[in-house]
Length: 308
Picture 1 (cartoon, rainbow, N blue to C red):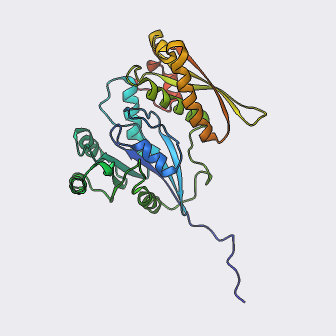
Picture 2: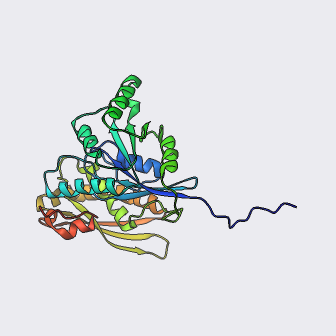
Picture 3: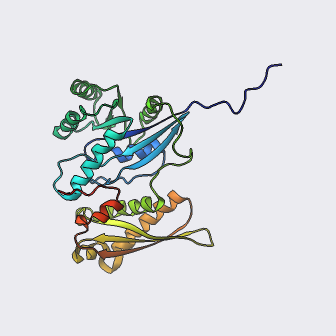
């Protein structure tokens, strides 16, 4: 009689870090959320919304893919800009492999060309991902793929639409095969290593961008002050939105508090969906002058404080 397979047989697994690199607004955050299947990083049409290296975690077959969603790479002007760009490049150098995202509509423009040039110094395997392919004719996509591969040696090329999900499954399976052998670093049901407090703050920051458009500069931040469970199974969360001037505080509040109420309602809905439980969200707006030059604030966002 043949013996049944032993449950204790070692499971051959793979696990690795994949950095998503690209110019602002090419769709990195949307792709992370599509690969994970849940919101783990904020998405906005405005550039430079991602600040820290938020990791999305994907399990595909026997592989765990740890996605590093880096800030968009651009020409930095302010101290915060320099910190974000430095963080993006450190993510590329520290990962096991690099996914280079190009906006298929923009093509190989000056920003994309500069990124490809600098990536020549990154020794890890590189995968080219052309995003937003649903907006570009096929002949242009093929020409762009050829042009990019002539500039830099890519191991693979994928054409996707992160928004619709077209091609995302093929990319996920390829990443699972590409990460190195090794044990899982996180529990199989964990989708991000960012604390829930940080994810909740990021969601609220996303709603600020969506509701205020061009009215409020990017030098605003959100911190989760308190988080407590209630007997009825709901969660009470208090957050503070920090701005640099009182005039900005008035913009966030809006006439009769209408703007802050709208931001809070939208954030509460998304946070509740993330937690899968009712949420009571309370938002406060405070002025913190010069927070963009405060090292402590950078550490709180997971960024290194530039000394220059």
